[in-house]
Length: 243
Image (cartoon, rainbow, N blue to C red):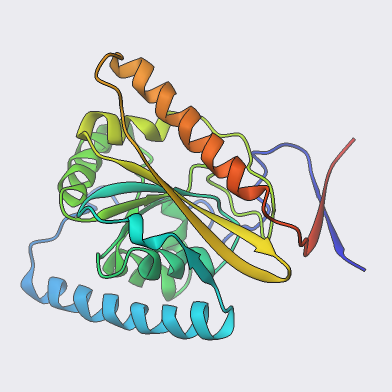
């Protein structure tokens, strides 16, 4: 019998980290110029790449559809959030040989041991204070010039959920303002197999205003995710909304 997961709203945090309220330190830096830190960062990246191959390809046996369309150096790629460790590792294989940077909640850095390694691998934790947001956006823009930026717009992890949860347009100002292409990578569950479908590119339109382009890209991305999610035909859990 399948496990039933009860939720109240699509904003529910089904999986909580051990330090859910973790906040970045006041002096936190997203971009470090220390040569030893950067060397360690590359070492961690290639280690994660190997772990990703072993776990995602050999254990989960994930298949990536249409990966060949990712030809640019820098772009934004939006994904649904349904695999605990897989969503940490899959971006490294999806975007290879490009090194991805993943926008995430600061609470991820509070995970014992692993949390400290995430920034070295490529995590870009979102600041909790508005005063730090300008610095954060500046680093995202710098990274997006040569690297893919991965975003999980649903925010919270819902394990093996086969549909797309509603999400706002707050993350779509990045590709609009930075003039970057956007793609989707939709994790689907087909005949007990995990298949990630990659679609795009979706680009802003010259005849639209900034606000209109943000809404346009939001709609294009959510439509693409929903279209691919309909390919899922296997459910590991039953999600039921509390009455």
